[in-house]
Amino acid sequence: MMIPDWQLPPGVDRGLWDYLHSDEMVAGYDAQIAASPLATADLAFCTRWLSDPGKLLDLGCGTGRLCVEFARKGFECVGVDLSSVMLAKARENAATAGVQVEFREGNLVYLAEWPDQRFDAAACLFSTLGMIRGAVNRHKVIGAAYRVIRPGGRFILHIHNRWYRGLGGKRRLGQMWQTLRRSPTAGDITMPQAYGGAPLTLHHFTRREILRLLTSARFRIEEVEPIRVRRSIYGWLIACTRPS
Image (cartoon, one colour):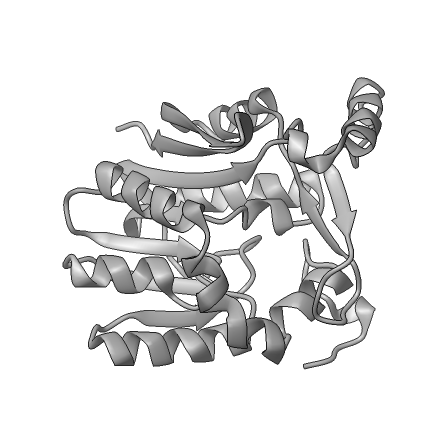
């Protein structure tokens, strides 16, 4: 689905829009995710922190991986995603699994359709937060998550590490310089995407940056689990609580 740049939603650039609406990407997405070690690690992390069935909101649900898994566990799951193509596949996956999940199309920067404290827990996995362009918009996503979680509820987040060695020395050096200069785009790493669209930008966080973002929204940090690839920290899984 093509729309002009001036109509792109807040926090969404052309590269992300093209990526999320690529039929080719969606066709191979489930197989790609299943082959990733992170897909096992993040589900295990969520299972450890979300032990009691309740109302779960998946921010950037993709093809419904988390929602389907937790609907099987007795959770009342709602998945929200910007991509109608991804959501169509998510509904198909839920039907195949024989579970009931509510999927809605929406922008994570705004969650106005849900009242305060609607959910017992929320999750934002597979570096979805890093796909949001602009620090102000990422702050709005975290603030919206805090608002819709009840006191005592959990928030699970996955983000990429700015200093991951797999990014290459030249790119890491450039990021170091931008970070020292406090550039507003420090951490934004742009790469060509494999599906013919505009280049895709993914924000990579420092540990200090993401913890400051979460605590500024009043979340209490419970656990920060590093994800290691070849002895380098690829990213983190983070469990937070909205204080009672």
